[in-house]
Length: 80
Image 1 (cartoon, rainbow, N blue to C red):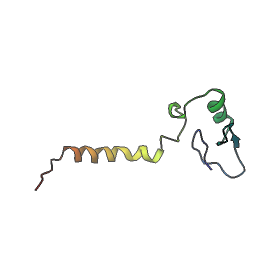
Image 2 (cartoon, helix red, strand yellow; image 1 turned 90 degrees about the vertical axis):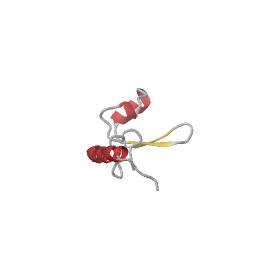
Image 3 (tube, one colour; image 1 turned 180 degrees about the vertical axis):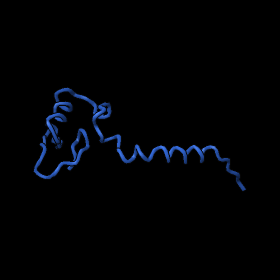
């Protein structure tokens, strides 16, 4: 199960499951995530400490992909 705020994987038996008034179930891994999500109302996309949307493996692969995209964009293609 993943934390709904930071995206960290949680082992079984850890974290909290919170049920909102509308019936949605939110899984939270730590009190830090709980405070940021509910009490402070923060957006996870704007937090620097969250790895959910950054993806460490994706960040390392980006320079290679950028070079490939730049080369592809600069190549001229001829239609037959």
